Length: 144
Image (cartoon, rainbow, N blue to C red):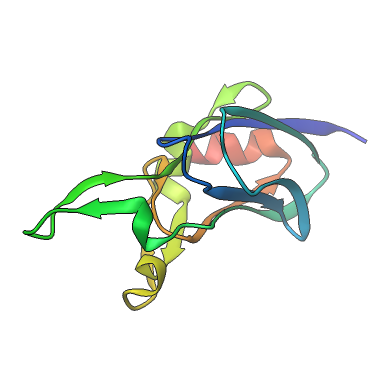
């Protein structure tokens, strides 16, 4: 069986805040941290056989007190989780993830559910989803 290596870095903008992250491939959770207190290098082997897949990043544990707002309602500081260096078999996929991902959240319960764009940081409990197909090199050629 041929495989492809997925990897990324997960970090927090405020290591004193217990933000958590799960990463799923289809129905398999392969990363689960309740407290991102350091940068994590995540790696996972994926079958490269023909198939449709969904990679999901799930932010959890965000609380209203993790965001500081001034009297005018402007965010002064905010704890977020960053997802960077997304690669398949060493090929940088930041452009693809910006173009093809969806960030679904509800502003931590303070607003209606929305589907938003994703630019590398998650600031609300929710899910960033990337759908892709294997063999990965065909999908990369179609989307780069």
